[in-house]
Length: 119
Image (cartoon, rainbow, N blue to C red):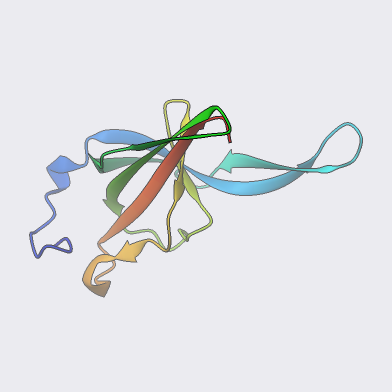
């Protein structure tokens, strides 16, 4: 079931996405740099995606667009709020903690956002 009380249909999990975890690497000068890597175990999963309407804002002559979505994937015990989802070349960062729907360990519902433009 999802949060609306409707059963989740496994056939709706149609979009292949890649789960990513944050890592810290060092650049040529030895400084720490934030980067991302695919999950070590089964990073590619199928998801149901529902896009929300995006927002645009202009600040100091720079355009920034924020898009949001809700993803439903099968439950994984190795997923938390620090992770991200890669769809094509776009990295969607989690907003909050993935929701274990009804604490049944069957599906996660995840809120994610993608910010593009000048930050």
